[in-house]
Figure (tube, rainbow, N blue to C red):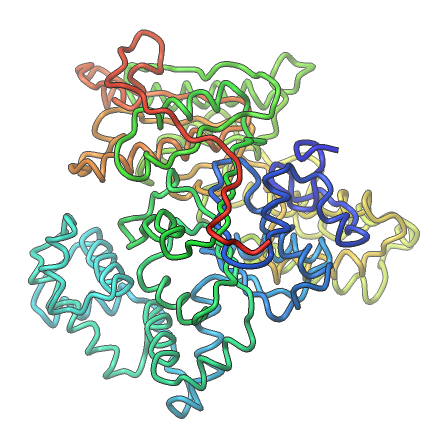
Length: 625
């Protein structure tokens, strides 16, 4: 069995409905891992740095590492803390660990782990209860601006709030903001001194009202651990082993918290890819990843370059994009090697104007989702994504897809299990499981039939409603539950409706949603960590990619990495497009992004290409065996 063909529940490249048996023992946990992934899984002593290219199975490697350590008796589940950056990623990790037989491991975001510790230790360290979290930070920033007699429009308010958040994660106090922002080359949305005053007033308002924000959770936890060695020792006794995913995205504040959790130990495994650093505007920096060997000379470094996600054609374009990159992250780039069979070449499309680009994209998507027997591609709508640089670009594509009668979902919308129709369906299914079916004809029916019967009363039908909008969104949610029931019944013969309800409860707790059948519309930033069979990268013109306000070399290189992230989301089909003018009849003055020079047909390469690094394993000086 190869790593490309063996897949476990929620593993990279699988669908959320795919189930697999729990490995029988520790050795079975290692089945299907490639040599580098196996090295990650079995290197359980000392510091380990995993440099993992896009699609190389990093989550698989680190979850199998934790599970192997637990199943082999080397790690105690309660002593492991796995940290990542989003609730979705933490939920996925918990789901995988549970399936691998390591369900007692904590997998949390930095903020979630810190808040849990803060709530537990606050009475002992400070007394009383932890101040409540401010519900709407933007409102409080608006009030602070008003007190400073500064009028901010909606966009300025969002940007000033972002500057305050950046200041806090980089541990910059209000009076230092103007100097630090200037030194960092930040494009402040208003006068820097003005932002500093708003920031100071915002902090004062929080103190007056006894509330804290998300960044305060990290700052206060750091403060408690620094000032109370007894509490720091208690935390270190609890957590003996740390795993940090997406390590290229840590901020200075998160790194400080991690250092305090670790103390003088080196029981740390970090995973990241400097070529996927796309959040520097929030304070994230790849320096901690790139300097890891300097801080931990004995560390084992494992490079994952076998790409199980994308075809050789997609990987070739991704490698080509980074081969023209500059800067420190580019010096450490990984040359990916596809493990998949060949697919179609990436397609490039120039359109006369933006509406034509949206209509052309919708038309091509319509062809892809048409069943094979009708001459189409037969790709499920949920396995297609349209990715753009800024959210304001979505409107044209929403309209074009609706006109083409193609269902879609906006990334970043309400969480699946928090949608009203899903919560309502869960209550009905729980009632049906508890009291039995009200329809005698369904008493001996299988699980999917029982679920369909229950959800029919809430608007589910075998065929979707026409058009788009709220009715279609509701139907898609219920249809996703029906598909989940079908997958569950197929994988668990003899299971009951009560078993399915328990599974839904576990998924809700892990925030692991089934797939909704709709094309995903998302910004490139929101697409990080996701993948689809077919990806459309749209609006790739100078001024949008790189974005107009990217001026410095570092900012432009981050834009290149953002496009790289977009390209590496595609498994098989990839289309890159741009419009020559904004509106119909406009002057065709736009140029396609410079990042495709030398890569798209008919374009000239600019500058020499930099060779990438290969895979393999590097052991540190006197590294533990």
